[in-house]
Length: 332
Image (cartoon, rainbow, N blue to C red; front, side, top):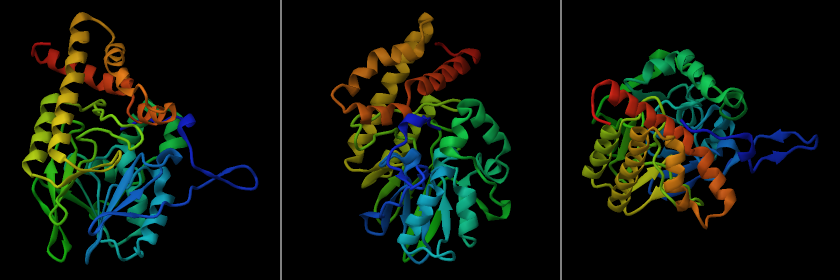
């Protein structure tokens, strides 16, 4: 789950009365044959959170974005030719609100669509009370002003995706689930048989088109370094043609990208571990080592990246991971 604050809201249209109106949808972009990228305009920002529509006889949407982005997403799906009975499936890579907050609304708008989710996330989509309570503790008033909440999805609409299970898009095209914990215990990657693209959610990290640098995403409560690295190895074993990040877009040279993600994640974890062992502030240690990576980037773009993927959220997740290891008697 990522955090964006009110100063990070851009790109809204303003009505005659001066109040913000819902941003207009961005035209879908075909990034590979039968793969449309949908900019959900999280917080009003362009190129921060993407959904992906796989077209075919049984079209499937991967990621809904936040509930606050639903009007934009629905307009984009309409622009892509999706009528109320055309969408066959919706996949959420994990249940954090910037990825799955809109799923209840989308399920309502597309009554024939099956909602696919990891086993460990399904109950939270059916009854999001606990998930929303936890999110409210983290974000306070920003939960409603930026993300929105999460409407329940009827349990009969949910399909738990097992590791290596396939979703049939039709025409010989399948989407294969890759159980990929580390960022979150309920995280799935999705491999497209036709394009060779892996839709990686947050498992590879965050790289915004305007932000340049790849940063890991290590929020509480589930981050686990060993699991995260194993998930990257599982992605690499698929020999993908490309990696599509939720934050943001399709990246080529997947072998190099996954190696970079592993190196970067390891460096952040090592920095956090050294600070934890020495009793120093983990967030300060991370900032001291990695803020230099943002030098030379437009401050407006730095703001987008750091509010979406802040050092303090990553530090909190790394601290929890280190404390969990310590309580289990593992060396720090």
